[in-house]
Image (cartoon, rainbow, N blue to C red; front, side):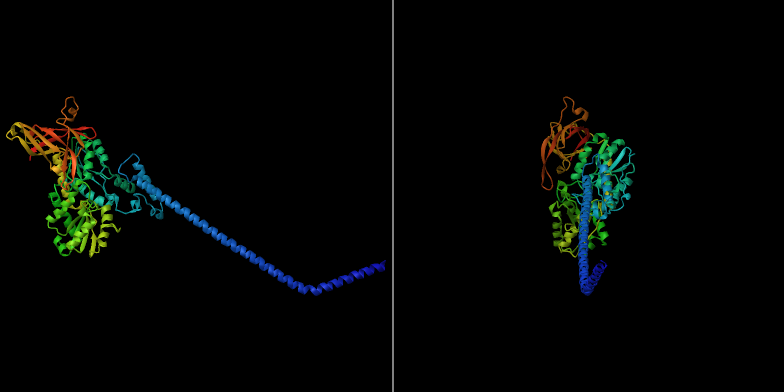
Amino acid sequence: MKKRKLTVLLAAVLTSVTMAACESTSVPEAGAETEAAAVQETETAEETTGGAKEETTAASGEAKEETTAASGEASGEDDKAKADHVAELIDAIYVQERNDDTDDQCREAKEAWDALTDEQKEMVEGEHADPDYFGRDTGDASKDDPLNADDIGENELLVVSFGTSFNNSRAEDIGGIEKYLAEEFPDWSVRRAFTAQTIINHIQARDEEKIDNVEQALERAVENKVKHLVVQPTHLMHGAEYDELCDILADYEDMFESVTVAEPLLGEVGKDADTVNEDKESVAEAITEEAVKTAGFKDIKDAEKDGTAFVFMGHGTSHTAKVTYSQMQAQMEKLGYANVFIGTVEGEPEDTACEAVIEKIKDAGYRKVILRPLMVVAGDHANNDMAGDEDDSWKSMFLASEAFDSVDTQIAGLGSIKEVQEVYAAHSGAAIKASQKSAGTKRTTEEVTALEDGEYDAKFTTDSSMFHVNEANADLGKLTVEDGRMTIHVSLASKNIVKLFPGLAKDAEKAGSKILEPTTDEVTYSDGTKEEVYGFDIPVEELDQEFDLALLGAKGKWYDHKVKVTLA
């Protein structure tokens, strides 16, 4: 049993030694293969891991780029939305009618603008809105006095201008006229009104300066119990702005003891393109002298010898008063200013268009040009339409013609020129004088019986510049004398006066009142255009003596007036 166990044990030992010997013989070869396999597996794993890392990194980068792009796109859209919102707010206050929300709208627009970044501000664009609306520097608004205080007194001189949002020009040009009038008429309180609500809103929103429109100024005058109101327009002529002003004033006439409208800068329009007057002469001399001095010349002849032409650029108008620009050209020629030309932004009259003026100067042989505005203020038209860098500015078009050696600009309004201020003062003074009733010289019907029956030219004057003979007829009516009775036929300025009554307004609607009905008259203006207006046959009891004549306006209200008829 023991022997068997030993044999088994020896066999087991032998077997173990034999297997160990076998394993020992194959280890080096198997180890090399295993090591190579391990290295290969490691490298493969590293490659796999590295590839995965690279793919992960790339994917991460792409994701970041996509996220950044999406974020940038969203940010850009947000910027545009904010800019568009401001543009909408600006367009909302770029209107000619004031309403109950105007003050809040102006404040909201400025607050929204201030909240924008510089980049966002450059994106503001609307129908009227652009970055310049709030961003352009036009000077110090604090230097301008809006003249909207109360405590007016009984006499008010209301200076009415179209207006400008250019702060420096507003203070120097409009403010210059107002200050001069205040010095000339210390017994009258000078106040301001603008006719352009768009400009009023612009100034209020940007600079927090409040300027009255015409209705606000008139309401202020009523509340202050003003008795005598004289209105001095700073407009150049009897154009559309002047007519609209008179229409507004008609609604307030019965709220004052007297309302008188002074002449605009260039006075009466006149019959034709060659008609000039003292106002046009004074202004022509003043603005030319100022332009010549600014350019460094001794006088206009000195500039002419130098080959320099001056161009005064006005606004232009389709109104019949556009002949005023032709009259100013005629005035320059009458003064001997051969190198002075009149133009207009609107090109009305046609020969005042930029292209037409360029051709005139080329034909005259001048090689140097100086552009200057024929406007009370040096505002948007002067800075942009005249002196701007856009292709359609006058400066750019003159340069593009390649006909001139130099094209320079002088950006200055008429209002700061003393001689121009003096013309306005003369008009205001005449209006103040006219606001006081004159006794006149009484001449009765009996005294004109020596006049044979027939027709005579007669001057028809009234106490209001809103109620007058049509300018085409130069203040004249046709006086008919028949059997000792006198009647004057006058053609009025429009169809806004629909009925007349010889007497007071309070008696016009009484039973049996003899109301004068209108005729339809056709008038011909100096430029050849025709217009239908209302005319009236008015009985005249006395010549050279004021009498009551009430009128009914288009809005159905009667107004009292004084009129006088004088043989021409």
